[in-house]
Image (cartoon, rainbow, N blue to C red; front, top):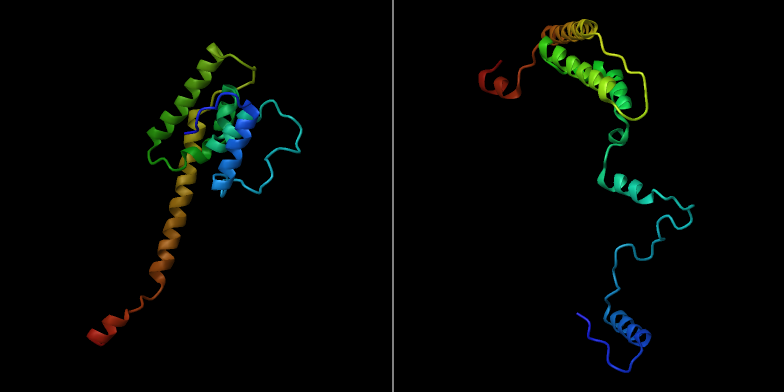
Length: 164
């Protein structure tokens, strides 16, 4: 902690004296960012610099900043990838019905920019999911058959111990 300013000494002189003492004692050595340019010094002034730096620093996904209808449209666009890892048809139906409920809620009570968002046809998504699942199953069976067709190689220890 610094000392109190002595009476009779100007504030500027006392501050300069404190800075010189700290510099001599090495308080300013090895500071983070020493010798580096000040970030954003040559760029034009951006009134939202603090929000952009917070988003970048905290790793907030920019999709979270979108208005609700744009989030819904983006979610509907990526629906086939979203339902791909689901195991059961009922899970797919529940997921799509959840999106449809959010679309209905936004249409009824939504605020903000008006962007056309349509509900998703549940049966169509389920049919696409089943087709993709069947394709993946056939590919897995083909890969398994190819592995089974390869002759099994005996391990070195089986050959050494059992003479195989």
